[in-house]
Image (cartoon, rainbow, N blue to C red; front, side, top):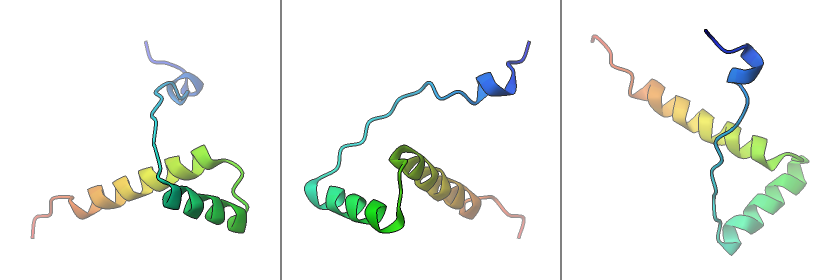
Length: 63
């Protein structure tokens, strides 16, 4: 039995990130400048984007 789409996409795994003061200042500045209201979404998209780019680079090729 497969789960409905809504249940499969439900976020249930929590991760914690700790930033130093300089990193936090950069994040605050970026969010203020670009009007970011949802930081969790920003971090999630940034992390997944980098991971997908890396996986694409590492993709095995025949030639």
